[in-house]
Length: 135
Image 1 (cartoon, rainbow, N blue to C red):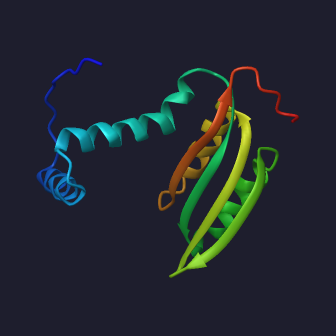
Image 2: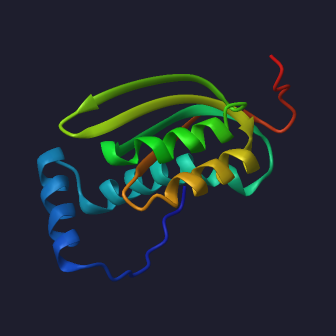
């Protein structure tokens, strides 16, 4: 695989943290950035092409957002196949297993992001252009 060099500008504090992490992992900065970008792209690039997808969605929020989250979960109950919920240090942590068309998952995530203090991480388990959602 060929490599391509290009320059980017990032905040100095972030660059320092990257250097610290690369040092602790005993890898060079380019290897670390490549690994981070691969993971980031894997978690997001699949939305570029319409398809059916299933995956895990982790949602961390303050307990005060519980009723707003419940309303959103109710609206998207058809795509939520399983839910685990727990509390830790004043935060709610939800682990959802979801299965739907990529456009529905993107819409669901956008709705969740509308709650400004919510952190979300989606990890696709598998996806297919012609997967049957009834299975």
